[in-house]
Image 1 (spheres, rainbow, N blue to C red):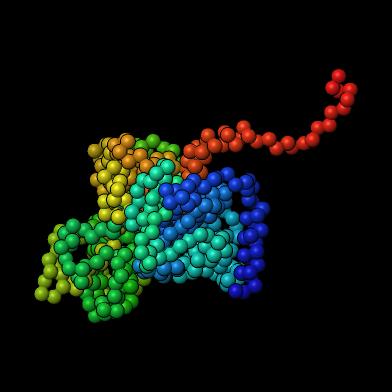
Image 2: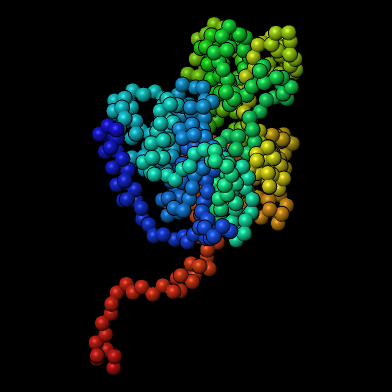
Length: 475
Ligand SMILES: Cc1cc2nc3c(=O)[nH]c(=O)nc-3n(C[C@H](O)[C@H](O)[C@H](O)COP(=O)(O)OP(=O)(O)OC[C@H]3O[C@@H](n4cnc5c(N)ncnc54)[C@H](O)[C@@H]3O)c2cc1C
């Protein structure tokens, strides 16, 4: 480790010590059915959201926590797995997991690692360095993370606790917790989608963009990419760079969408108070944002456009697809496209029942469609499937009383966006969204313990001063 990084780590410790107030412990572990102390909070997912949540909880003196991730260390999230862009799309100055501690920002880490000049000349952050920064963040804060642990079921347990069944290489284990945060990423409450007309195609011919793809095998092949968001362009570019003969990017819209709505909404008022709006406004904004989909940056487009064999096809939704003697034929209003391989960059869809960890409550999770009827011109069945979350990011029941325990399961992912706006889904919102989640968690823990706090207060008898009484005062 270089001396600047050693100095930065010392600075982190000093900054945290200076801002630790109030640092009194305030939680007493509850005993689980196994007679061992249950966790106060179990966080599922050690991507940036899970790590930042753990950090926020530790700063709130909630230290009896654990973060689990099914991936191996360093492989959490998209950065070194299915992300196919060279750099992050967000500007380099956006802060995130640091929760406003200057020494914990990406900038501080980058400057310590490569020097201030390098930071000044940097355009965008490489995804490899972002992944390395997240590992550093986790190490310097000594966050309690366990990798290779997949949460495969959540159920209610005695004493108002939750039981999380965990699959590890050694078998199945059970952990008890008062609260669980699902920081399980984009597909945390559903899955990546393949548009309906393509679903019958063999996986050797059609995949979604988050699947592993052997791009070397696409050399000399015709590739079709469905969708026109940033990930669609990243996959098209990767295919072109690996020698695909031609790449057609098929965009549903008559004209491709070039506005990035997340840029507009990146201001403190919106990020902080969107969740305080009524349903009408929340639906109106987020339906518009999510239907616009993620815009792509100029560099992402240029990475494709510099190849003569890249073709953008606008106004070309897939109407039908059939396997042909060689590859696939895609029918669109713009005509037929013959291709050898299809990559769908078409985002995610909510499907609670498809997630094993939600199987005991999937049918009773309230959705937006359960709670809000938009005007006819604002309807969207896809967005109606998003969970309708409580003000502490907790799941709510569709039918009250059937699964009351889900009020202790908090969702921090793209699934939270209909209720909270940008939150668990992008770096831009972390500085406001993570503290709000942590606030909700600590509020729940505090309220649930109110009898104990009252008893503790009533028993509190520590004198702050010694008062000497003189004989004449006592007359
Ligand atoms: C390709 C791509 C590029 C992006 N680029 C940007 C960008 O440039 N700027 C920006 O602001 N945002 C970007 N985003 C959006 C967002 O920042 C990322 O999705 C980010 O990874 C979200 O962090 P997260 O911690 O919520 O989820 P993730 O990073 O996905 O982490 C979730 C973790 O949960 C684990 N997990 C899931 N289920 C279980 C389970 N049952 N048990 C145990 N572990 C589980 C997974 O293994 C994973 O490691 C991008 C997203 C994608 C997909």
